[in-house]
Image (cartoon, rainbow, N blue to C red; front, top):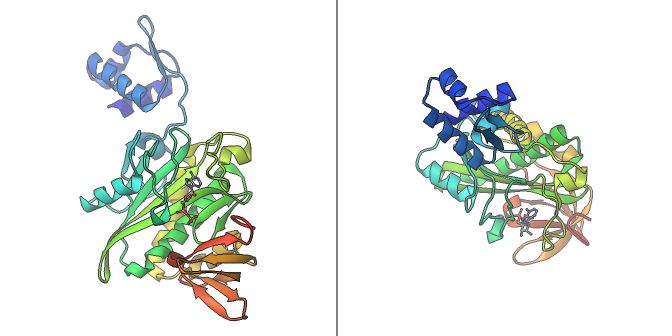
Amino acid sequence: MKELVLKHLKKEQDYCSGEEISHKLGVTRAAVWKAIKKLQEEGYQITSSTRKGYKLIVSPNVITASEVKDELQTKIMGQEIIYYEAIDSTNNEAKKKAREGASEGTLIIADQQTAGKGRLGRSWISPSGEGIWMSLILRPHILPNQASQLTLIAGLGMCEAIERVTGLKAQIKWPNDVVVNSKKICGILTEMSAQVEQIEYVVVGIGVNVNLSSIPEELPYASSLAIEGGKEYSRKKIIATFLEIFEVDYTQYVKSLNLNFIKERYEQSCITLHRQVKLITKENECIAKALGINEEGALMAQMQDGSIQTVSSGEVSVRGLYGYID
Ligand code: ADP
């Protein structure tokens, strides 16, 4: 109902009386009024005048299910979208929905996360109205130890989506952070539920700092697209473009079950390669030169003794010698 009222207001671009809308849509005026209230609660600015009726002021940068779907040209990803104004963590909600049987491609979006999660129990700062905080439910027929490969595909997809929508040069910090001007713009947290050899579901959680005008002091390596680009960007366009790129790559991946088909694109976008990096594990830290990725998405690194080792993404954090990248 509210979608139909919204469509009508968008089409008219001017005041429409409640009576006119109720007549056109064949519903009561009370139903129209209810729908308007709901839209206002979601963040749409709708003015009302007793004489002239309702007018949509601007279609703000909202990322409700219907707004994102308007932009979307996919067959699986985002066909079902569940939007929350605020939620603790979209990954937690996605896991709950997945357990309840949500289908592959279901997307959970929140305008704000109150307890957003990063890797290794870290937290992800997710203020309202400014970022993309979303989680995608997947049900691939792959082995549990292959799930981390989906994170690389998602990282590449978001890197390319950001470039396409904003024109900014985005790069990937292996395995799955997206950076602009060497600053962290996006993080990805993949979680799964599996039984021995079989995956029940995978949840790919993605956080993108889109229109944040400032970054909290505790995140010296982070930035936002708005800060780097000097203007605001459409969150729904970035979401839709990401889902389109990801759908194509994911479909290819579940057929080929290796990352050879994206290796070239990934390596071209990867800021980590050809640099000296610090590899940090729970036990120790070492310095190595990042050479490339293999077909499983692991980092090929040349150690200081000249040997080449394969580093898989679950085990390490990668940093520059002095800071986040350099
Ligand atoms: P890592 O970079 O070690 O792999 P994650 O990708 O899991 O870590 O992200 C968690 C870390 O990201 C947090 O410890 C915090 O330093 C940082 N962080 C939290 N919120 C944001 C944000 N909105 N933008 C950029 N970085 C963030």
